Length: 381
Image (cartoon, rainbow, N blue to C red; front, side, top):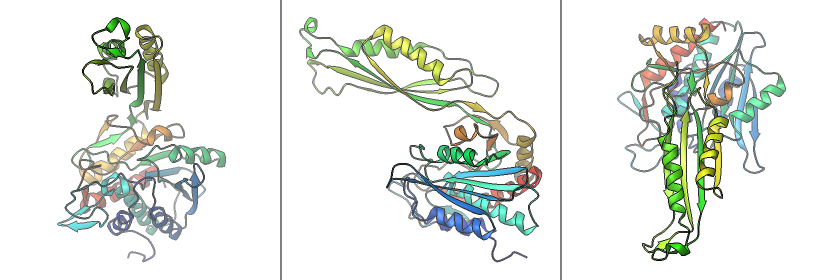
């Protein structure tokens, strides 16, 4: 018999969360809902706000139990802007024929709701054998400067170190049970600015065309075959994302040319090694150019082991599919968590994330709840 005080229903909880229009960096009550549910189950909840005064990022850390092992359940409640053209209002959480529509249903309020409901069901069966914690941020879709990374720094100061972390990002391309993420590629952005001397195209000897040097730089960067991939990673990829001179005239040599590059790299590289290579290329073609590099995360891998196998077993028991262990896709907050403890990701189907009419089936949310519960038991909590 379900205890009325335990939030065992992930669907109603997900609806409550979606109805909070928590477009990053706004929270709009989403973390209040999480905190209330966890406090009702006996968790010690700590609200953590980091960042500039008046613009703090809302975060939450909660723990139940003091014994090991400690399993951390991580996620975020912020969402991207909904955009226009939705069939149903993006923050209404309307259910039609077993499908819930709403911004954040898949990415990733559904994962948060399933984790909370799974813990509630575990507590219905009796006291924990180990400990559970939650790390929930309101800044994953934004700059991510004062979210999970700052909470992890606070955790280190408090001596909070989980034995394993399960992040509920949507990992499945089309069907529940397809993919567990055990790592992610690194990501870095570079802005190359080449300065020249503006002039008339008919008198090039009186000008200095920065476009020619920028083209040479980008040609050498794109010509390099970075690698063939590694055991768990696909080949690294360099993509030119923008070339801009701001020149609307056909008879003017511009004074400045700028190119932007993104590299998604595997464990055969580091942000430092790639930065050094790019610096060398730029300086050889344009010694006076500026190169601004931002590394949003290094590649990382959680080596498959006992805990990943437990998660894989839980997925297969519930969904009937043996999941593929994968490292593809974009970045996630797992890139920060990996420095604290081993981390793996498993969540809902991500086919509609960041799109209009983002949606999940109610059955998939129930399946995810069962996967999380099965994993908790295998993990020993």
